[in-house]
Length: 127
Length: 358
View 1 (cartoon, rainbow over the protein chains, first blue to last red):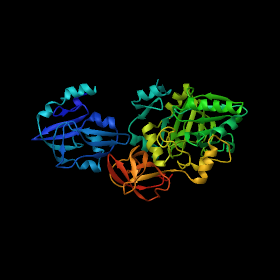
View 2 (cartoon, one colour):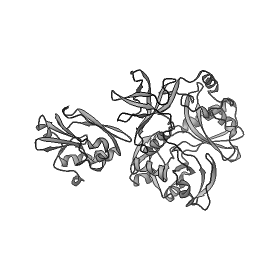
View 3 (tube, rainbow over the protein chains, first blue to last red):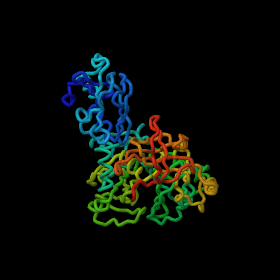
View 4 (cartoon, chains in turn yellow, blue):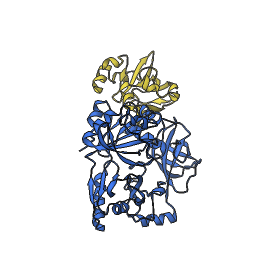
């Protein structure tokens, strides 16, 4: 199972991931989360320039059957939004760890990453 | 204790995701809601609906009892025919919606919603007592298995399991042998597609289920399919406690026959004269988003006129659709309104259901 969970990033208990990349942090949801949700049909995200506060809700993902809040794994200013999701929300089902990323942020405090679960601990949580 | 259908173990083994619904452990999806929904719209799918109540009423006064219980005219039904109906209280408030089947020998079977079986059997006995009816009321829910086979290819698929044809009209029921099991086959369903519902002994429903070689579907697809047709769901569009509505409020005028005598008739006759207070209709979102149960519906000026009772992203249309319960006279087909989704008013256009032509 942990083979399917990339070790290049950290995880929140609520199934968001955060991957450091050259000074920014990219954010998405896990394979487990997309499987639980089922067919994703709608994503609501903040805009570039908006502020994210760690542990606070920053948007929603809706599948046919349910609505799920998204929680910020780190604080920071949004520097990029994955616009492709607005036309193709199913990218979240098809490729949650890569093409289905949600946002990139300029992190306010990189130490917040250390408070998150590593891949192994996250794998234990969802096992 | 959560009740389990005779097929629950088989659903678990098939990897279905399950949920509790009406006191029953039920599959929500086997593959994905979209896959299952599309199978039923374009091909054929099977649903375990053994959670539905099964109440038999027999005896010399069976017709009298069912006529008192339900709003439609059961006297219209010949043996082998069925119709859709509602069960109302003295105020005309819908307690349940149901299909009534006229069987042979003056016996009737009706199918209340999941978890309502004990209450509805009790209601029959109460009525029988009150009117001195000579009837036998049997709650056959636990002993009965029920499978819905739905979709444009349902008839062809069905006929592979038996040596006879099934050229039935809508809302009929007849005995048949399916995969060697003695069943009753009804040309009913709740998806808007042609198809059948099979009733058989609980102990043998697995044999029939396994013989049906088509897409298994869960409650998720059942919900999106009925919603595209604008069909009401107990607990969503009406609930005697939290959303008391009459058949007229729900647009179900066609299942009320005021020429028969039933509980709630006088209240409904008065309402037929004065017009209902509420109006169940539909809408399609213009703005991006999904309307869900409980979201307020307002005029463009922000005046609240009602709320969403059921909403989803329609897999067939690729648009967000919803059923809405609004004040009578507040909207007409084509009006632009707002649905308040997480504090944000989203534009939507009123559209009288069904959302699909079938």
